Length: 105
Length: 170
Image (cartoon, rainbow over all chains, first blue to last red; front, side):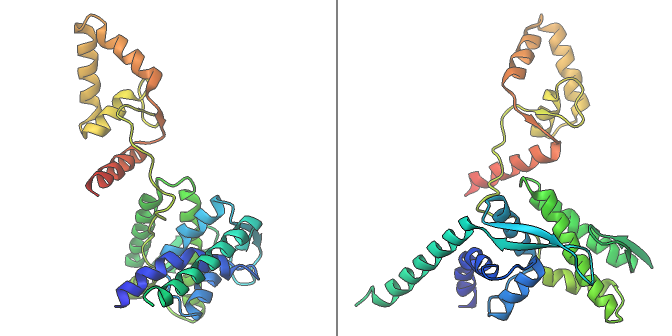
């Protein structure tokens, strides 16, 4: 069963990443932590290629910021286009959830 | 003990020789996996920096970077999987000109890569056939130059071929 749930989550990863940078800027490591903290296990190895695609598609923007402990980090923020897509994702996911509840009745 | 410098990080990280090999192999696999993506190099640099962050944390906690620590770290990090939605690797053209390592146009190098034969043999055969076919092959060669797209490296072409093969299997 866990494998099936993982498959469901895979499709949710993109909106989840967008949501993680919706209200505050975060760098990749923080996004991974934020997702894990909300019960959304993700591996860095999966996250980095996804983030680089989101940047390429213009859904997130980045800015370099100095860090007190390490090298400068790429902080990501959602773009206007990203916001629209996140909104669309949210609406659709809600539709799917209601469908799942109502489809057999 | 040896050390390894990682993208973005100033100093080098002290680590055991085994750990160094593990990380370098991991990054090499990441590079291959991301090869077809237009932002592949940048992604691998980000991955390098992120691994550096985690190594730094281990060192800050007074730990050492040895084989078992590195194995665990890389396992948790997870292999770099190209993002399927966008990295539909480019289709491999039948003929192409490979820029890196070319002699004249890179056409022979492309063919040799596709057929998986040694490029110097293929070039020699092409020259011999060119001489004996009364220039016919030379004309064909020139015509092919008009159509064959350029590809940067043999690695990229090989990846596209591999992706095509996988698509066919599906």
